[in-house]
Amino acid sequence: GRRCLSQQPKRSVAQYLQWKPAEKVDDVVVDGYVRSVRSMKAHRFVSLGDGSSLAPLQALIPIDQAEGVAVGAAVRFTGSWTASPGGSQSHELHVAKVEVLGPSDPKTFPIQKKYQTPEYLRTMPHLRPRTPVNAALLRLRSDAIASLTQFFANRAFTQTHPPIITSSDCEGAGEVFTLAPASEPDMAAGSGGAKEQFFRSKKYLSVSTQLHLEALAQSVGNVWTLSPVFRAEQSDTARHLSEFYMLEAELTFVDDLSDVMNLAEDMLRFLGTSLFETATVQGLLSRSGQLGSVLAAPEVVRRRWEGLMQPSWPRITYSDAVDLLQQESDLFSLKPAWGAGLQSEHEKFLAEHVGGGQSPVFVTNYPRDIKAFYMRGEYPITSNANATVECFDLLVPELCEIAGGSMREHRLTPLLDAMKRQGMAGDKPSNDDDLESAAGNLDWYVDLRRWGCPPHGGFGVGFDRLLSYLSGVQTVRDIVAFPRWHGRCDC
Ligand code: 4AD
Ligand code: MG
Image 1: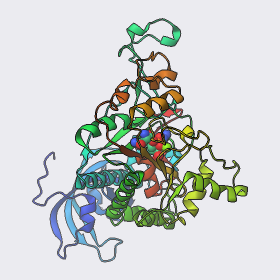
Image 2: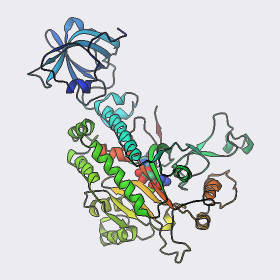
Image 3: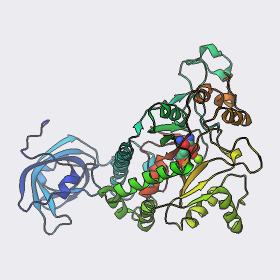
Image 4: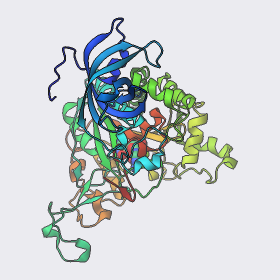
């Protein structure tokens, strides 16, 4: 049974469910996994899934053919695709021939048709995608990547692959993972020396590809990437992963932050518009609210998609946002103050109230001292007290920040000044033996400012946060197939 001998083309379960011939069609073949088996007098009633749709295909098997057709088994059924007037679906498969291609012991198979908690499923990431909802989330991710690729191709952006092993901490937040081969002596134990390091000096996993994207944008023009990035954050929240995908775009020869925000907004609106009507999204919407705490309520998820499709999302400066928050100061356990970062309770309030909960909200021009060194600001600096930089965070209801971006400091002297202010080495090679000076290995980044650096800017979207927002999945740990977060990296 290795070849498909049927005259009929093999379809996926999703394709079968769309196929409604008036006459019965013989000799059709379907491959899939047995989700459930119900015994009847002369038949077994089998639900078959293959990860292509939330709904299973219904198959009727004569009892003498049903050996080995057990929950979890990989099977190939050959039979007739037949109208089933009384059934829950318009057609069902009357099976003539069963091939068990991968047997399963239904007593020990951990994925059951009944409700299983997200915590339980998270303990077996290798089997979790066999559940219909988790398979749908994988399809959503794939569809989203296709849509975004289309968006950037329409605008003639070049897709690039910046490196994952880097010599600096782009965000300067000290959340980098340090890289070392297994054979390398443990530096902390004092046994080795810098000479023995594989790359001769410390290297890190990338926290953002932005700095490299800037270099690429200076050669081919506008660029984008969807890249894994890594952050050693100890945050134990529904929004933080140690390994996640960031979608980053860099626009060159632009001088205005609104050009960068327009691009982020257009991109997300395109994504919303192109995916909302798809079977995967509509299927997830129909399932939301029914799965305990896995998915948010359908009206919440629908509002998120509608918000994404809204024209002109509100934009508010950080200073105006702080004024607004201070008027509602009683609502917050941490009082809003100019110069401090926005807490998630503040971001939630802004996302709900500035946009009326109808669309995402841009908060712009944060204080210079709480943002990364590369953001462009007024120069020379006239007042330290209220200096801001040309940047934005994009906030959505419930989930808060899903994207951040800025104009980049493209002038040499202001950039060097900013690096000095942030305690980073300036324009000469630095000793990178310790983490504090990680951001010092940026001579090459400074170099870009020496020869033909036009005004430019870009943004990064937390891709997993975006997908969990749009699917209604309550935590990023359930949107990623193999999630890693502080304390957990299972398989
Ligand atoms: O705001 P961030 O730190 O911005 C940057 O890294 C810029 N260099 C991007 C750029 O301008 N090209 O990260 C961007 C987004 C955040 O808004 C958030 O959505 C997501 O990445 N993010 C995380 N997602 C999941 N787990 C984490 N630990 C995350 N940290 C940030
Ligand atoms: Mg940010």
